Image 1: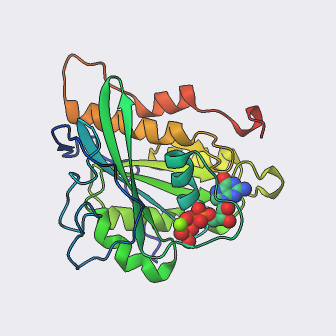
Image 2: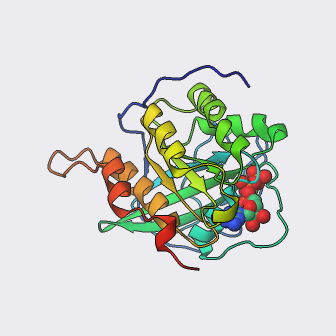
Length: 256
Ligand SMILES: Nc1nc2c(ncn2[C@@H]2O[C@H](COP(=O)(O)OP(=O)(O)OP(=O)(O)O)[C@@H](O)[C@H]2O)c(=O)[nH]1
Ligand SMILES: [Mg+2]
């Protein structure tokens, strides 16, 4: 990938959320692998260019698509499983093939916000599959692994890719995962903060293993997207940076 610099902050206009009437029906099933280009199964993952957030039958007022991106092994799948099921996938690392998705409905200030979360494969060979999904994403969580310097160094390349394929107004957050592995840490918190500041990105350190800041990351995204979609002049403007600064916890404060 090239190492082109990108503009240092994203725009702030509202993404067009899918505002759908609350539905009643069965919950979405297990995540499955998308097959771009083929016909979407009923209630299955939407295909690139054919956005649909109506499947799954959850109760919700507004729905958004969130994508997890970053190098292979940084913990994208574990972050999603922690958020969705409150569990940690220990043991053998099973690399994601193509793309999976899961839905979760959050209560954000009295409104049901459905996040359809796309878990992408970090491996280079699946990159073209991932590209097709960027344009429909309302938000991106970009992860690196604090125990893997290369995954941090590659963030700039990911930002270049995001600039190329995602919407200009996509909500973007940088996450440094695996902070529970203090002994193996090679990327300092300050380095993550510095990079995030350089690009005007909200930033947090997380641990999918311990659950540190995982709910917070998704909740912050949901709040930001909801706020942008409401466009209510009476509502106080939600400040994503301030929110995660206030609510975010440091690794040192959390015991296993
Ligand atoms: N210590 C620690 N290990 C983690 C954490 N998150 C993930 N891991 C481990 O890191 C490895 C990779 O995790 P995955 O979530 O599968 O990584 P991924 O980013 O989805 O990788 P790809 O699917 O290949 O893109 C697994 O062995 C996980 O158990 C964490 O917060 N702390
Ligand atoms: Mg994965």
